[in-house]
Length: 359
Image 1 (cartoon, rainbow, N blue to C red):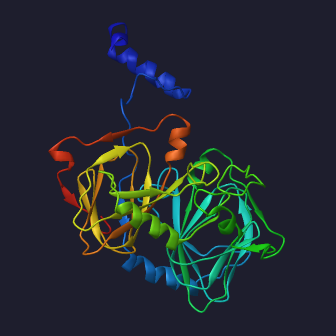
Image 2: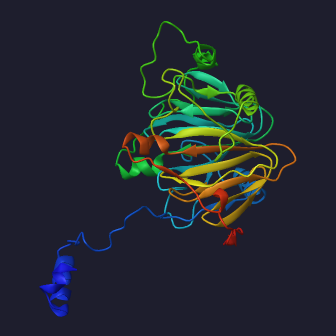
């Protein structure tokens, strides 16, 4: 380094100590040419998660003291988050319970996993929840959850809390009553879920999708129809949930995707500057992440860190279906998104290790 030609080793040491003493850090030390993951990939097994989520019903009750009964997917190495920008949690709502109405600046999605008879009300619109449904509760929208059925409801919450906290923009407000007034039932679906048609009046002007509720039957029909036409080499049959008013992602800070991996398919590896949280909705298979193999089966969850090589394979006799939350919109909004294919070994990584729970 040129500076070492002018300062001796002892003088250089004193210089660095003096800078450190007043909290200055030389920019020429410790630089990196490309991103490297700050967290390791991880997998949670549904067979281990579900009993503890159900047991949480004996520990706390959703009320104004504990408004949401959730168990977070806590990735090793992160203080509070599932990735560096997103957090995922499992929420349980028992029959007869109400998780009271509130709103907050973090954006949230609800991916329904198990149960029938419950609903989420978003801005007055009652959305009945069924497995495979996606429900949005965008930033600063009133929302509450009620289970008027006879069985427990479990869903995956996905929020941009780590990002919002980092930006010092985390705000919360309770609704005056436990439940907000219901002004409609499934209104957003009736208005905005008609494919290429939308109302000619009441133009949506909010910075998020006017459609709160993406129902599984429509999602699955679209997915299987696309499977007859073609596929992507990295994700097989993959689709993105979209904002019907813009055609873009459903939210400003995260996008949601659903992908079908056909029997016997192994996708090619790639990497990109966005992190992903996956839920295995159907089937079984494995994902190789930076050379480590993660075997998964129905109900499991796993994460792929930003800029980590990854590829998927189905080992099911039938289809494997993965739902994912990704922070691509953040990266694209700042022109920081990039993607790169893995070009060695015909696009497939050598497997160097196997993930085991607790490793």
